[in-house]
Length: 471
Ligand code: NAD
Image (cartoon, rainbow, N blue to C red; front, side, top):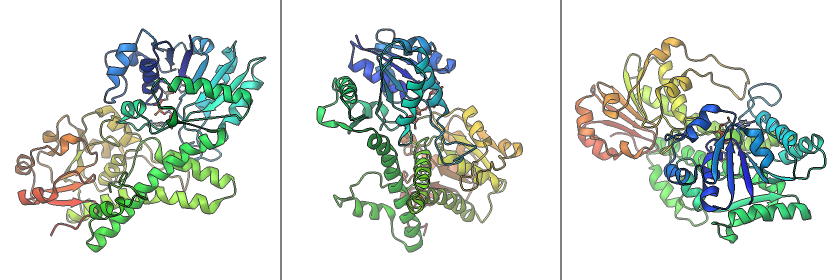
């Protein structure tokens, strides 16, 4: 029986391993983590992350061939295949601060694998890592063990939060990179056999290690670039009277461009896009390619610009000040169907409004008050000038209330900012909301999900991204 262990029970490790366990009943899968609270939650009724369909995958396998444990060393030593799915955030200090990936967690995982291994292992990079990481990992593993053969594979994860289970069940592709040696080919085949339980063979792509590592950074950079491209167009639309939805539709019907990922919004967020582009920028700089680095940097700059443009629009529309005015924030997660707030545009928008002394009433169906308060009090890292900026003052955070219902959030508000595209915000009773708001009542739709014409008929003043302004 093949045994798999995954180090890191996060947004990637948990769902990915649960799907392997479900699809491969003869494989024993252990997901291990140093975080006791995460593992306790994985073993409880309330899983540590919100992801549609996750319960239905985890619960039938848990305790049968899927185990969540903090006994990291035991499960790693027993495994034939060790996935490493630890976090790889942006470095906050030292060489490369603000851009380079922080590989501390990866390095300590690799040292531990070397320490506890008594048999040959395939070590799989599931985390997103800089190109050439496998070379560093190989060094750590071989210099810290004796007589054990480690084959390193790169198997980056392309799932998107909110649709993780769907993406894992039916991936566009599974990418496996390995050494171009007989041992490397054998390791690739072993991992291919796992995925072949449910992924059609033509969707399992094999590549050399460096191509696989770089492909993940490239994929995220291309996806984020599309969002920044359409958001840049949205600014021009607002300046000229064009409508970004019509422009997106027109260009998306060109089969060379395609229709996906062309929605204008308040900006992209999530733990990956910014981090991975920064990482790419750093790698380009280290390889003497400053012009290429600048090209990718621009994707992040446009994203930052889009968020500040939104804040400016809110303030300028509300007679150039939001001081003392109540603004309802609908949605705080970086996208719908997740409770993840890492790098969510809501953080920058809320901080911008608090900077102008607004009072915020925040509601998100999946984000806790603790999480929101933690995010809003966090220092902002300026990657162009790697020093920590001042956090919001404690008084500013007092201007925030977190509520558990949209109607509560909007009561007596002067304006509403929709920052996450949760379906429930499309179905609200806006007539009732209008009655309970200060007048004039504003809606700033950062996701273009409400019917602006209908809201205008009710009496709202509506701003949608990249659309002609309120007549
Ligand atoms: P996460 O922070 O949710 O999970 C990482 C887990 O690793 C944490 O629970 C942490 O406690 C654990 N960990 C760290 N060091 C450890 C160690 N030495 N031993 C045991 N456990 C350890 O992160 P995530 O969102 O799951 O992302 C993991 C990786 O996958 C990152 O590189 C990320 O870029 C990449 N990725 C993320 C997504 C996504 O949508 N979140 C998608 C594709 C790829």
